[in-house]
Length: 87
Image (cartoon, rainbow, N blue to C red):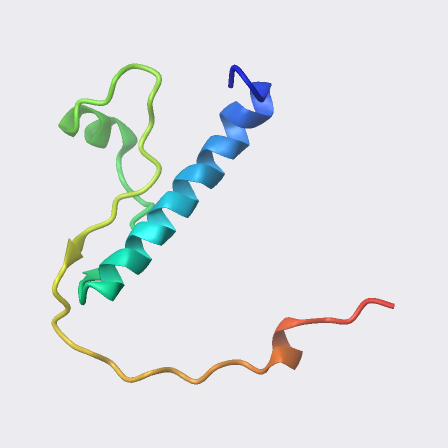
């Protein structure tokens, strides 16, 4: 917030945390582990449980463990389903 003001406080910090979690998930997968992004949790309970300092807030929980199954690959959507050409 000191450097980017209100936008940094409310947006950039969440973007940075999201990127960090996504890369942690990719790293775990590369090690043969499974993860799950959890965004629905009691903020106050988590803050107390992990002893976060005042002014800090949890963004996500990421359980990590060995997968119980290895599902097959899912089909990919076509590029035409995902991209729209703008004139």
